[in-house]
Every structure is written in structure tokens, then in C-alpha cells.
Length: 255
Image (cartoon, rainbow, N blue to C red; front, top):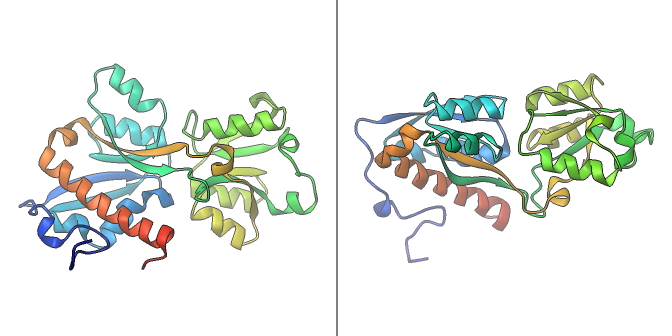
């Protein structure tokens, strides 16, 4: 890098001028570690520096975020790569998929299958075949994690009729596991690590092992926000700065 350039983003002089007056931007997130580009940029003031005032709302259901982005109730939404944006595009709705928000790179499996600790300790669940008849939670119907479920079931010689799927938000999954109301969950970081540390559950199958390099999630712009290029471009500058910080920390051990 040129002398004096920041390792976490472009030099200050390379940033576009802040918008004045500041532009409010409603952002819907799932409260996943893959939302780090939003959280880091918000915490470090990257969006504010460019004249964007983020209003971040946690919405636990990806299809709801998609519907709100499609109808301009949110300017930006972060959720899985599912059928929602493609159905919207087929109807002529100008929603835009604009950036990565989470890949299952080998060694970085942030969305995986965890199983209740007591079921693993007792040996009741040892293989994928032992998931037969079990109640498993996931975020929502037809979400981007469905391909992982399919691969897990195939390894156990099972079909979807052999398990009981129930839908709930990520924070509720750990509570349900702790209460023994469910047997397993497709959980996201950092809540997966929290469940392990508290002895509630243990990682059973990594998403990065079941489906290496799956493009699990993306960032979307609403039709109205995508058309406002002054704000949309500045949002992306701040977002990429935050992602560089994240990758420096987790990939290079910097900061």
C-alpha cells in the first residue's frame, strides 16, 4: 500500500464527500456474524462519515426482510440467497443484489448444524441417520440453508418426511435447545459458539463441510435506494471498508 494509506480502508482523501443533509437509511439484518459489514461500519462511523444515518432493525425472518426491501420499506436488507429476489425480478421489481454477505468458505463455516449436548453425550445421536424423527429448527421456509439440510439428510438416507422442521429466529434456537423443546438447530455465529460455551449444544456438522463455498447470503438494495446512486455508492464504500476490517481481523490476525 502507498505510504500513509490505511490498512483498513481507502485513504481519507479518497472517500467521497459526505451527503448534506445526512440521508437516513433503514437497514434490515438477521443478527448474524455475516452482518459484520453493517455493525463494524456503524460502530466505527464509516457510514456517518459519508452522510448516511443508519437505522438498523433486527428482523428474524429472511422472507420478511426481502418483502420489505422489495416494497421500499427498507433501503437495504441482508438475508440469504433464496427465491425472493428472483421472484421479485421476474415481476419487474427493481431490487438489486449488490454485495456478498456470507460465504461458507472452508474453515469459516458460520452457519452449521448443532445438536443438543445431552443427546450427543448419551450416544442417541451419532450420525445423520440418527436425526430420524427428531425436531430440528431453522430460520424459515425456503431459506438459503435448505441445500445444507438436503445434503445432511442424504448422508443419513433420510428425506424431509423423516424429520420435524420448526421455524424460529436465531436467538430463540438456543433457548429451545436448552429447554429440550427441540433436538437440533441450524444455528449461526456468534450464537453457535455461545451455545457450545454454555454446554447447551455442540457442533455436529459444519456448513462449510456440507456445502463448501456456498454463497449463503447477500446484501440487497431496494428499488428506490438503488436508483439514488449518490447514497447507494457511499453505502457500498462504507460497507467494503468494514469488510476489510473484518477480513483483516479474522483472516490475517490484524487488529
